[in-house]
Image (tube, rainbow, N blue to C red):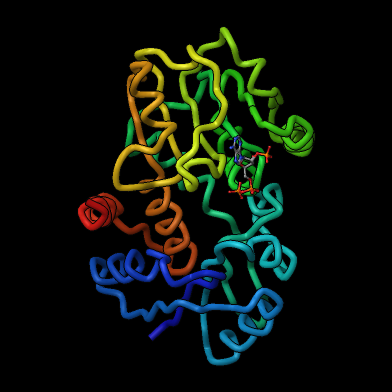
Length: 272
Ligand code: ATR
């Protein structure tokens, strides 16, 4: 039995054990997937103990993604661009770090929603870890333009500068968005967690716009309600991204792609 886990603080509410258990069940794989809680200053110790007792891989959630990046011996390009790791693989005494968040977002938009990113005007709201984790895979899709809007402009500018080798991003404050329309608007701020709305001007959405909130919830988030009230063509929350990033981790560890649709439907039913 190969052993995996999600490590975080907090970790109790993580859906990852259920998602991976479903992938394994559907694929006839014999795995064990646990939850690992680590005190804030004990991440490396807890990871070390897991490896010592035969663990094969870890998903890493908040607040440990940068620490997982720093403890990786080898990194994929997308993880090194993000400077954050959400998937660790332990093999032959080495630690391999990857980040599947961005590809999870891209697959949800492109494959599940059938919306291409290539050639589109894309706006991402926020400039924290959630944005950093997804920019390289988004840029790899070759949008016509990628705009990063943040309340603290300097953080958006720093991200645009950091990701310049992978593609051009324009950094703006929310005020500068007035009068502009976008094909895809992604909310990657933490506002939805506090039932708040980022200070977006009116008119960002039109009947062809996909409004995507990286947070998932039972009802519509304030951002998605706003998009709906402006008649955005499509609304999506981050549940599909959650399942897709898990599927990519599963693929890294086990070499096969799980079917995500059933698991996403199952989680959606559990939410409602
Ligand atoms: P995460 O890792 O989830 O991205 P983070 O690094 O704390 O979390 O970043 C939170 C993001 O949400 C930031 O972009 C933050 O804007 P600032 O950089 O200006 O702080 C954004 N955010 C949080 N609350 C917000 C609010 N009420 N209005 C606008 N942006 C908000």
